Image 1 (cartoon, helix red, strand yellow):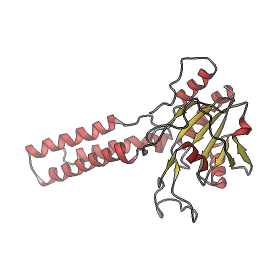
Image 2 (spheres, chains in turn yellow, green):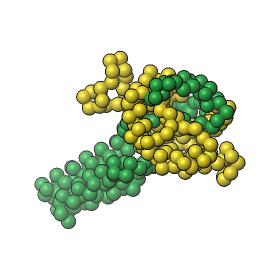
Image 3 (cartoon, helix red, strand yellow):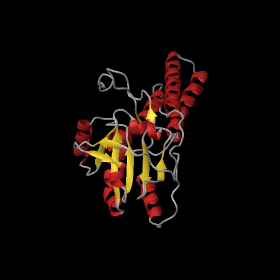
Image 4 (cartoon, one colour):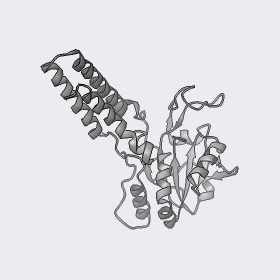
Length: 134
Length: 128
């Protein structure tokens, strides 16, 4: 969630660059809605509890949530799998133009790298490193 | 040198890494925080030298605690908190997979809805 706090700090700059934002997690919609209101972030929060998109992107972090009773209890049938924190910037045609795939959950996409990537799409600034590994 | 100082420094260094997350809610952008590991290793080295020069039960306990802290920090930073292997697919330049997912506001969102607009997709780990 740290990346969402970081996003809130730079949201206006991203908005000024005409980029829509969606945040995806395995959390159910009601949990995401609470987070959206708490962060006061005017972006869409999407729920992928079965990991359909997670698997299409190859970023399923298996058994990443601690087992019960140390974490919020998943519903029966749910797994403890969650997303590997990953960011993608898509162009108008849905083509990936920048991706940030850190090797550890302690690292999230820095706002400066994201803004630089957007500016590169606009033909401004120096080219951003694509497919960066932290 | 107070006997308890090296293990205390080691523990504080490990806790200090998480301070920006917990207090400032700001992420640190380093794969391996070498400076924190360095402080813990330095404190451990100090107490190991001390225990060889002046063997005593207190310094031996401090040495064991410091070495344990170093081993735990190294395991956490270099192994436990790392993702498993994965392919960088889909790659930059490839089309993002189509999807339709429910939104938190009770509607649905498809990638097709965003066509004609640039889109930032943030995959996050949940409320933590």
